[in-house]
Image (cartoon, rainbow, N blue to C red; front, side, top):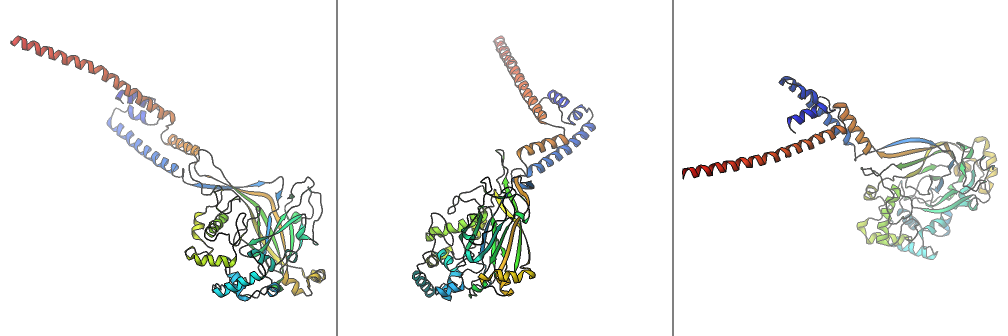
Length: 503
């Protein structure tokens, strides 16, 4: 820019201090304003660095409470007995202690006392002969046949006391709970506890819609009375649980997470207050930062199921099993054959580098991200003694079908569970970029305006003056070149004339 153009721009720009600098005629005034502008522009550069640091790199979350006007669905309830095989069935089918230990050792259980010496060739051969004698081709057949049954475990199930929308009173089906049309109770295979029971509320209201909870509290909660059958507990100590009672998980999709259980001990009344919690990802076409979660990535084995971190870890493990053994271990997956116990142990021996008997795979957990979209059940648990002392004689008489004759037998076998919504709100968590592109532009504009009074118009103004200055420079160059050429030609003519005169 020429000096005239700089002065003209300085007089018209909205950037504070530039005009003051241009108007100074004395060197001291120019030095003062130059110093001020240097400090201000340095602070501006530092501020712009701060506001742009988080852009494209970090995400944050916000949580809010959303009131549900249409009610909330009942969760899927998964119940498992701590005891995986009944002692009477162990004796009936002649399952030896070594075969039982072999069966328990190779399942991912949180043992108090573990033993890893059961995988011998003799024990494998004995187990193979035993399962062949009783035609047990699948592992889940053993757990369903020798394990606890629904009809003996779930004594009473009640859904609500009164539902204003459905216009119906108490619903309970003591006579045939496990085959009721109002609830679906199915056997599910679980790697930690063998055969479990999954309860899905299948009741519909007068409009034919699936029944929902429309009143917070126990009025429309689920009440379950369970019989642990402690007299049927296995005598096996190693590779077995030392606890009595049941464990429970609650979910909306029926998926079970390893280790995330609520314990239900006999002689106790467990009150489980729940709340629905959802998580979503707010992402637009201007999103720059990669999200800190996974958006339904493809899985190898559990295709078609809602993605979760735990399912991803499980899929990583099962993908290795299917690749090496040609089957899935301790689970039922559509399109895959279940591994037999002896088959799985032999496969792990043939592939020692895979370490298939170690169910904790750090690499799998490390490579699996949290799910961006989640629908979970949050639970608060409280406990009191069950049953009340004044009710014990009547209950003993009421439970004669279970051969309960003393208070100790009643307290040692039975437990009650209440599952209910504490409030009809949804805890909604939203993930979003800490600094979006529009926020970045706003922050930059705010900092520029604060420190220098500059704006987009100021930047455009500088560009216009630069373009105008370049045009002026080119025009002057074009005007100067012909005059120089004429001078050169004139000088050459004069030199020729002087030469002629000399001759």
